[in-house]
Length: 100
Image (cartoon, rainbow, N blue to C red; front, side, top):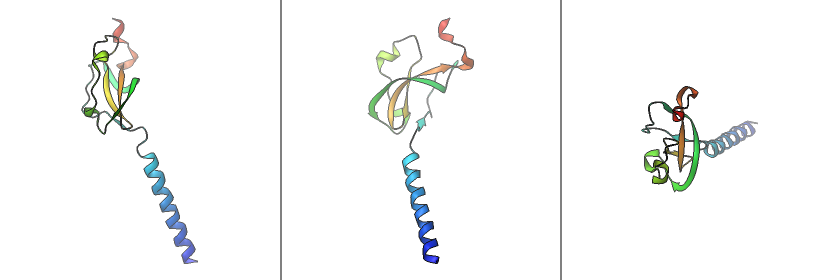
């Protein structure tokens, strides 16, 4: 009886550990040390491009010049799920400052 209980506990711990490692890195976004213009926020953003460049922190990602030259959005790069992504942050308070 004790063996069955011990086996059940070990099985649950093993399964829990497996699920933890599978799901722990999903949707990880590093926004630390990333600055955006005053009237914009990283709480919401649109992904413009997902690159093939691997990363652990957003500071490792460089925004390509073709995005920096556009005036439609203050593009920046974030490390999302260990890949560099070029994103367009959203305006604060749903007010689109790009119109004016």
